Image: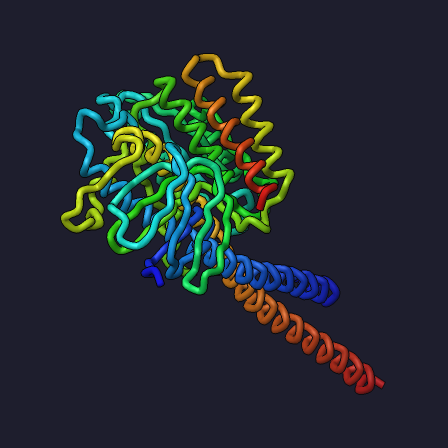
Length: 135
Length: 292
């Protein structure tokens, strides 16, 4: 049995999850990563994606986050999400709206930097859409 | 001297008013509870955000720090973000925030600085428009917002950051009312940019282990600080919402009590007058009988 550690998922509106878990998969900006107990201290930004946690009873649970960052300390792991919902609560039109916004941003971007940023976000959201369908 | 009928009408109207203020007080109490819950639910995020920021700020050299944190090095143009309520009838709530902001603006203007104002909420805008109207550059309307979400705050945050990036101001200060209790709301000014207060929080200790950053600390900080501004605005809006309901509750409580006093007074003079009239009629009858 793997060791459990404290994981917290917080959005600005409320604390979504705070419990002992075995592992969590976090969508880092530079790639998905699995965090388990005694992970090296790390701070990373998070892209829009699916967070999957595994509780000690082996039950996986998924949340959709839209950007944020994760702080891993020896005591536990905290994910500060810009916006987070349980995967079953996500509304299809909300995601569509975000994709549409990103698309508009991409088309309206004037500088190359903005354009690249918007394109990244758009790509991430589309991947997320696929991922949610798969769940 | 008002007639008996006039008095009766007055009493009826004051009673109707009392019913309204009583109902408003109870509605405010219910809303206050919800607003307090929302403020409480948002607390973990801002606390962790502060801890993380302090942690990361201590790892970034002064030179690498984003301008949002270190400031532009000038303080010529000040931006005041004044958060007030959309509705009135809440005692001195809006007036207090507006007064604090106005005094601040006057002081800055006296020092020869430029002042720009963004108002959030209609009531504060109405008050400030009177003598600082030409300084108001933008107004955020929250009238249609039923439950305050992070998106509302994020919009304001984005507005501030866009202005900052365009070089429209050097220092940003946020005005709102801090919720202490139902009877005490304290108008507060909080400096947003440069974010000097970040360093004040004790960094969370990571033991002796070396922190890793992905991507590099400066990039994370650059991402975090704009978000932190939205979080601060969100917190201010939530505090404001709770304060507004608290202020309305005590204002309506006072109004209900005053209406009660007034009813007592009016009833007293009504009864007196009625008695006087009865006495008068009796005298008339008796003196009429005696004359026979």
